[in-house]
Structures are given as C-alpha cells and as structure tokens.
Length: 191
Image (cartoon, rainbow, N blue to C red; front, side, top):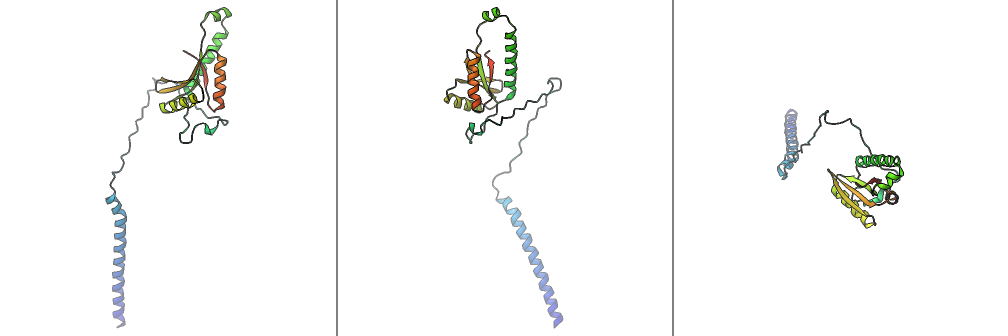
C-alpha cells in the first residue's frame, strides 16, 4: 500500500506541475497579447530626416561661430514659459565687422570730404532669429519698455532692430540700456 501512495503522489505532482506551467503560460499570454489587442492607436511611424550636404566646391572653409551667453546676463529677462530666444551671432558679427571697416574708412578721409557727405544714421541690431515668433515677442517686449523697435526680414532670418538714430552717440546710449537687460546689441550704419 505504501508503493501505491507514492505512485499517487507522483501522479499528483505531475498534474500540479502541468497546471502550474499552464497557468504561467496563460498569464504571460494575457500580459503580452491583451495590450496589443486592445491598443486602438496605430504605432507612430518614424519621420525621415532630410539631410543636405553641400558640394565641397560650392562651400568655403568651415569657420564655426559660437555665441555663449555672458555670466552677468539676467536669467529672468524673459518669462519662464517662453524660452529665451537665441540671437544668431553670424549676422551681428558680420555687421560689427562692417561697422569697424566703415569707421576706419571715415577716419582716414580729410575733414572737407566728411562735411560734403550726407549725414549717416545708425541702427541698433538686437538680434536675428530663425523663428519669426521669437523676433515679434522681443519686439513687443522692447516696444512696451519705450524703445523704437522694428523687425526686418533678411533671408530666412527675422532681424530685430532699434532706430534709426542720427548720431553714433545716441545709438550707444540705447545699446547701454539694452545691455543692462542682458542683450548683446550691435550698432550698424543704416543702409
């Protein structure tokens, strides 16, 4: 009779193992397959990124221009909900080099020629933005503070400028006020 109990016990153990394996397999199937069946939204398809590499012959030598914000610039210049628009440094660097060249050229001319030339006015370029919304936001903000600001489309950029001012000194006063707000404007001759 002892042998018969062991055979019964072995049979019960086999049945229990089969039931346990079946329960585990059913649980895994429910956990994996049920969400797939109940998912009503299709899976998002990856977007293709368009990448254009210009020919070597058509492009000059690479010269990176990196503009880092100064440590003294206040972080709360713009509201927290809107990220601070980053001006494009390339346009302001080119404008600055044009101003330097123009000032050197005017210093070398005699006084008689300087009087014969018409008066030149100056504008203050505050920034150039790829997003038109950022440029208009900055324009509205500075207009509320009393600056004479306008935007100008130049290629794919929107420039934010103040002015025009009759003298370089008047433009420099505006620059000091804008720098106090954490901006990095540049004076350029009006064209």
